[in-house]
Image (cartoon, rainbow, N blue to C red; front, side, top):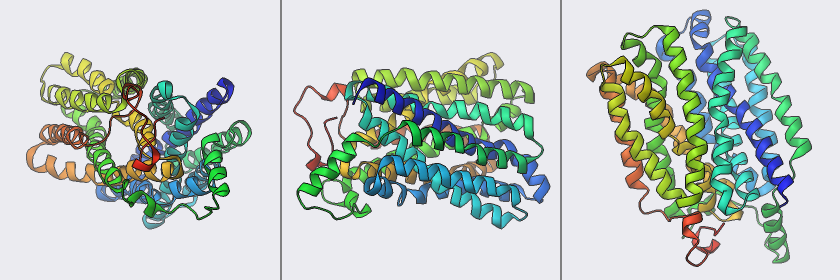
Length: 410
């Protein structure tokens, strides 16, 4: 692939994932107003966020399958359209149950975007630059979070208008993707090879559970699930925790913004590191480092320590941006989107219950204790990753890993 094409893929996928992040964060921003207007309890409000993540989890069975059978570009376009339509539809909602259904359906598109953009970038960029490229695209998430907050500040308390505008605005990445991104050359070559061999059967999700891949799929899913439980547990309750430490709401908002900025920097720094020393050791490093700094963050009584450890934690918690490259390399081209999408989106689906569980722990043991427990999930995730292969730049000294073993050399 030419330099021009790989950069076009990078920029377009960054734009698409930014909109994906805006849609996810917008609900959090608008939730207080939605609860008031629809007379929702705290539990019902929590279920709106949970149902979105559950939709993302279920999408792992459809989005990756579609991308492997019909192309990465088509999968990305349809995913964008799906969450755009169902987000805009929220403007007409008048009941909790309909809102719940629409958020679940929007989750199918939101999960599909991650599968498509991560696969497109993995297949567009050379191995020695792949981790930093995928990390840059996933770094659109904190940018999307900031934009969602800014747009919310302009349109709220009219949350119906907020969702209508955000849903309709998805036409922007749809047009850009349609006009600037070609289909993955790796996917086209794979289809051509299969056609010459008269192997025309469609890709099945069952293939990622076949001998040679099943072990990778199960362990990869568990690794992501454990770290996502910790991540969403911390980030959902972080504003509440900071408020409990005596910080006013404006200071909390500033600290959350600083954390997002630090997260953006961390994603790109550790993406570069992963290209130098390998994906697996870098992911494990960020997981363990996050677990070490988290107790300092939540147990300190010093406001000054609280202020600087928050951005440090956000900087270190960069593992989410590294899974795109690692999981994409874990599976052969034929089932790459299915395998990587299943591992990551099922993991996110499991994490849907983390905020609810942490709320229960906080009730009995206190919020700081619950947040420290989240650090334990980071450690478990790192330990669970030990049996997985080491991929990336640091792994290229040995012979290439073949697709028959479930991995690719790059």
